[in-house]
Structure formats: C-alpha cells, structure tokens
Length: 211
Length: 227
Image (cartoon, rainbow over all chains, first blue to last red):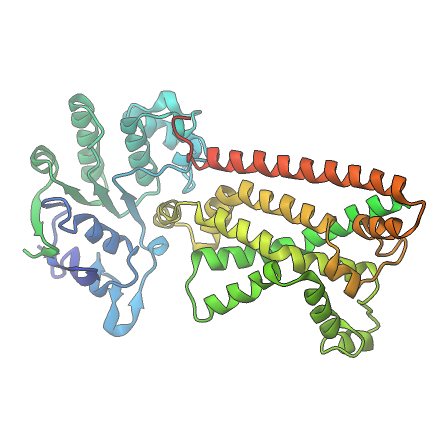
C-alpha cells in the first residue's frame, strides 16, 4: 500500500428518514459494496459521481480532492473522469447505439471494437428503444468505458444478463481493470459478482457503510 | 382588405413567435430545471397575461411603451415608436401568447428525464454541452409544439393589439381587426365570412400541427411504450 489510499471517502447525506453515512479508505482497484436493497448503495455511487450536491464530507481519488465541504470544494461530475452505469441504462433515446457509444468522443474503431467484445456489434444502427434490457445494459457499459474513465461506478451491471453473458461481460470488465489504471466500484447484491470481480468488499445496511 | 389582413396577421404572428422563442425557451427551462429565490414570483408574472383581460394587458403595455411611458419615453428619444405600429402589434402578440408558450416549453423540459443529463455529465460534458446535446434535442419537439401554439394564438390576438397598436389598415389591421371592422359596415358580412373561414382553417391546421408534434415528442421520450 502506498502512502495515500487510492480512494478515501468520508461522506454523509440526509435522505428523508434515512441518514446515509459512508466512510472508507482503500488502495484496492476492485471494490464491491453489498447490502440489501434500500440500504443506500446506489446513493453512495451517485455521491462518488458528484450527482448529489448536498452530500457533506470529503472524497479524494488518486491524489485529487473531489469533495471537501469544509474547504467549499466540489468537483462537478464532468471534471471527475468517471464512468457511471446506473441500474436503468438510460441510453440517449434520440441517438443510435453507435452515437451513444461515441457520445464522449470515442473513435468509430474503438467504439465498434468494444461493441464486438461485448456482443452488441450488430446493434450499432439501432435506436435504444429497440434493444432488450440486457443489450441496453451492455451498451451503457461500453459507453461508459469509451469515455476512458479512471473510476468506473457500476450499479447492478449484470441484472438483466443471462448466465453466459454475465460471465463474458464480467471477464471483460476484469480484463479492462487489469489492463488500465481503472478503479472499479461495484454495487450488487449478487455474491457471484462479488466473488468474480471484487478484491475488497464493504457491507452497507440502513445507510451505514464502514470498513 | 382580406388578403392584406391575412398576410399582416401571418407577419405579426411569425415575428411574434421568432421574438418570443429564445425568451420562452430560457424561461421554460428555468422554471422546469432550476430552483431559485423568486421562482414563484417569476412564474406568477409570466403566466398573468393568461388570465388578465387582454385589453388590460394592452393598457399596461401602452402605459409602459407609450411616448410618455417608462420605457416608451426612452425609446421615443431614440426615435423608436411602438404604439400604433406593426412592432406594437408584434409586442402585443408576444406578451399575450407568452404564457402559453412558456407553459408548453416548461412541460417539454420537465418531460425530459434528468438522468439523461446526469449520464451526460458523467461522460465528461460540461453543463452547456449537456443542454445543447441532450436536454434541448430531447425537448425540441415539445418546444416546436409550443411555438406552433404561440403562432396560432398570435394570429387571433385582438384585445391587447387594439389598445396598443390600434386598427390601422395595412399596418395593424390583422384578421380579427378586419372582421371587427367589416361587421361594423352594413355590407361587410360576406367578406367577414371569408375571413372567418381563413381563420378557422389556420386554427385547425395549427392545432393539428401541435397534436402531431406532441405525439412525436412522446414517442421520442418513449412515453408511449406498448401503444
């Protein structure tokens, strides 16, 4: 372990009745957050992505401060170089699959190569509304990866995939993390996903995440 | 007189729609997407002409823009006259149609799922690029529907126009003014009927266009799944 942890998080957010608090430091590059639904796992990802401006506390990633409320520091999502794949893939409905993949400026070659690796190369000219749930999920993952993120936030990424696809896509993510500087934070309630992808696991319940 | 009135109405409505569009888009977006101090006051003022008698709106505009008005005096010094001109008719049409335009644009922006914006931001797009590449294209058919309705409303504007712009042939005598004038003359009814026909046709065409655009917007946003 180096001097500074890769990811240092100490945040809090009030969500109506639930008071969310997450505090951990890690130098692992493959992290999973597990716990029952409603525990606040997805919200932790949103806070890491910078999508919850009311979150208090501190976040530092790879030597950069992203959030420090006391110092009035907040780095907006578009400057964090992250990839966020929410449970509901949310492809841009006014663009084709290829345009979705190239949204962050990826070349056609890169986009079609990754599409082939994820088994969606035959869908490039389609509109998102004509995709199945599993196809849309893979396109959303490819779109996030093509933006070349340093931190990849995956929220139940395999929920709509069948067992074979699940293994393929999971292997693909593992390869990508191994071959680059990418750090992965995975939210799931599936133990197989945790076993295959994560080095370090944090449990979350009723809004509390602690090592 | 009939042809003049139709063309004049179309011209007033066109320029009123063009002039109102940037303001309607900005105001509709603000009301749909931002919370700020004075938001309720802003929407109250913007929507007021919807329920205010148009004659009253015209009177307020005349007091503001007339030669002795707060803004009008200043404009008069600069050599710009608003009352009883084509520009005056356009301004009356803008103000009276504005609430309708803003309401539809606001609804169009509200219908766009914010999670699209969020995903775009995580993909590295700065806020104005999120707006131009995601929010605006997804709201576009709804904005166009608002413009069509604002155009149709402007074609028929009477109350505020007659107070601010008067009823000057070839300058401010739009379709409703012309019908009003013709009905005052004992021999005008036949001509008035023809304008009524034109007016009905234009209104129905505009409403049809509005409906088609709204349907297209719903389809774009996938709000009609399984239909």
